[in-house]
Image 1 (cartoon, rainbow, N blue to C red):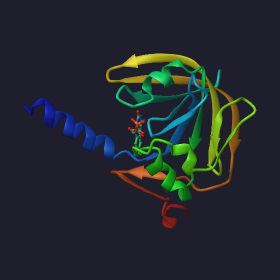
Image 2 (cartoon, rainbow, N blue to C red; image 1 turned 180 degrees about the vertical axis):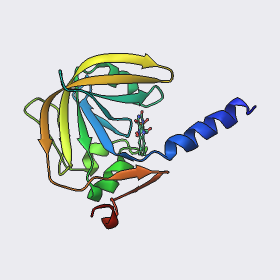
Image 3 (cartoon, protein in one colour; image 1 turned 180 degrees about the horizontal axis):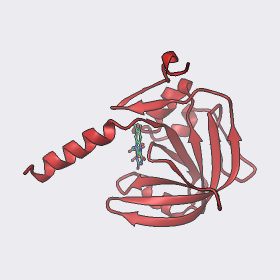
Image 4 (spheres, rainbow, N blue to C red; image 1 turned 90 degrees about the vertical axis):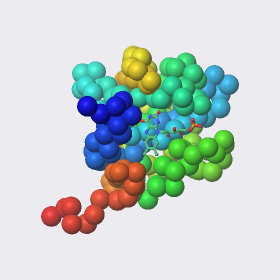
Length: 165
Ligand SMILES: Cc1cc2nc3c(=O)[nH]c(=O)nc-3n(C[C@H](O)[C@H](O)[C@H](O)COP(=O)(O)O)c2cc1C
């Protein structure tokens, strides 16, 4: 029987085998400052109503601020936005001075040139172990005809050309 550390390592390896897209979730904190982090726990949940989810690690610097917001944007990254994946998972403090973004008519920060941006209001928060799951109801959808950024085994990149017929 493996010990707990080995069990966790096996879990991480198995989850690392599962490829995902990459998003950056953004919002304004209580002081009106933009905040955001790279997120690959994003998933579609429901059509009626339109719901999505993502989960935030309790150790993330902006964790308490994210629990206080009533809305957020899920910016789905395109293949040419690998630098944003790195920026928003780095220890850079003022991430928003190093990227292009705008405040939307719903008063949310939205990154420029993403593959898609889903502006959401918070539907539910569910505490789950060392993370909290945030479920959002989608209020506004911007969608571009672009290629997605992928994440697999700690690598980021584009879908290989051979993938499509
Ligand atoms: C590809 C990728 C996916 C990530 N997904 C998540 C996630 O779903 N939830 C989360 O809390 N952190 C996730 N992270 C880690 C956060 O982006 C990172 O811990 C955070 O930005 C650290 O900075 P901070 O604590 O200064 O905000 C991910 C990082 C990468 C590179």
